[in-house]
Image 1 (cartoon, helix red, strand yellow):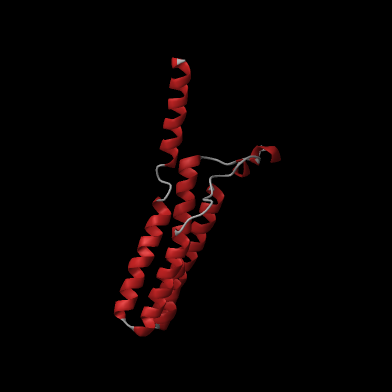
Image 2 (cartoon, helix red, strand yellow):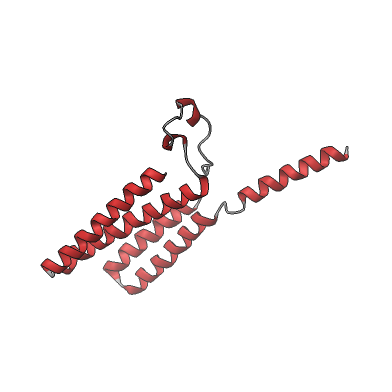
Amino acid sequence: MKTEARLFIGVAGFFLVTAAGYGWRSKEPTGTAVLTIAFLMAALVAFFLHMQYRRRGLRAQDRPDAEVADTAGPLHFFAPHSPWPITTALGSVLAALGVVYGLWLFLLGIGVLGHGVFGMVFQYVGRGAQRSSSSADEGRSSSVR
């Protein structure tokens, strides 16, 4: 993830310089806002990739001496089913309709969207602790027998 993080830092830097130059030369707010949002989105991806690199370290793809077999095995845990993507989509639709129909619907949509994103982010937050405690319980129960 180190290489990808550096790549997106470069993309974010490009959009930052472009947004500053465009805003200074054109004095047009719409294009400047779009370039600023592009900078923020690239910076968010760069931050995520950098944090994943710091948490997990080098991957096999980042090492020049790695073999193809080093990348074999499960990648990570993926949720089998979850209500949160539907909740997030509903919140996005309500917020978009709120732009057309009124502030009250927009605020309701932002609330539902926030609830969906919060649920998606924290739905498996205790998953690792449950696995480690259950394996400790299994070890304890086998030593008691």
